Amino acid sequence: MGISEFPWYVDTKDRIGFTVRSLGGKPVAEIWQNGDDAEAAACLIAAAPNLLEALQLHVAYEAIPTDRGGSQGPKGKAWTAYVEARDAAIKKAKGL
Image (cartoon, rainbow, N blue to C red; front, side, top):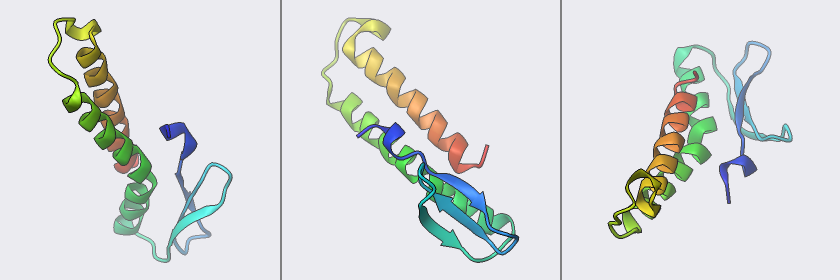
């Protein structure tokens, strides 16, 4: 499964908390409080699928034997995919 299958996002809920929703708008999680901690928690929940994908890409990268193809070889391409997913997950988890 690719990350595009679970694009979760944080939605505010009439000043009483935050809802994390799936692409179709279905609630994934609800946080019934406000403030920076509540928003940070909602962002982290929304980033969970992205974080999982980044970890899976890192595991795949580590499973590839060393190759001599440099950045264009299988290991280099796997590293690039991991770094992009990692950076996107961190950004999303921070609510950026």
